[in-house]
Amino acid sequence: MNPIKPISPMNTLSMQQIKQFKNEITRFMMTYKFALDEMETRIEILQEEFQLLHDYNPIEHTKSRLKSPESIINKMYRKNCGALSFPNIRNHIKDIAGLRITCSFLSDIYRISDMLKKQTDLRILEEKDYISRPKPNGYRSLHLIIEVPVFMSDRQERVCVEVQIRTIAMDFWASLEHKIYYKYNKTVPSKLLDELKDAAHAAAALDKQMERLHNEIQEIRESEEEAEMNRIVIRNQEFPLPPALLQLLDGGTSGKAE
Ligand code: 0O2
Image (cartoon, rainbow, N blue to C red; front, side):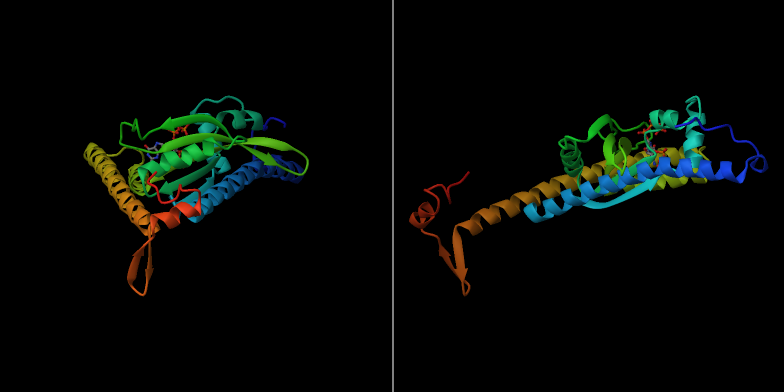
């Protein structure tokens, strides 16, 4: 693709040039939209499969966004990325397509990340674990930069998507912090910064506590299921299954504790 020409005043560009430029940007952004669609479908499949097999959905909600051309250009300047060409933008800006996955529990974050890592046609280019190592301001999340294959009518492209995986508590904190950061135009009073740090610690403690409760509930559920396997209930009357009958079912393995 051609380098993006320095932008001259609009009235010096012909309609034809503007049209062509618009067309190129649309084609460029389109591949990122397709990559996001692809990732969202994969996440929906994982979600549905998990619900069917385990009667549990590890994902609370997902949200995707495409970075605006304006913020892409600003980031190119901010990071001193050199020429404003499409290949250069593609090389330097890895979060043009962003997908945020919000989970209920900490363990779900790593479970989802592992499921994505097992998909052999996805390439994990980068992983930042801000959960095991939170940012100094308290920010926590797991970030993956994933290269996704996108098949179009005349070509295949590998397109980067930034996937952020976090719990509801992490998301709550991050969206508030984001609002405060922009409200104060990035110069937040130190008292507020300290309070935000405290809130981040509280959110982390809540995540740990919820995880512990979740595990306890799972254990209770599993032991109830185990007990259910060995009895039948008819008209509120309980009949334990005779061991001899259980042995008949599959060569004597069913009913035995694993
Ligand atoms: P937006 O609008 O959410 O996309 P870089 O992406 O190169 O600027 P870095 O360090 O390479 O920075 O990327 P990193 O640390 O993986 O962070 C990228 C994204 O994570 C940010 O995107 C935010 O969405 C989120 N993030 C990172 N740190 C913080 C934080 O301290 N607070 C909050 N609320 N979010 C954070 P953008 O492009 O900044 O914004």
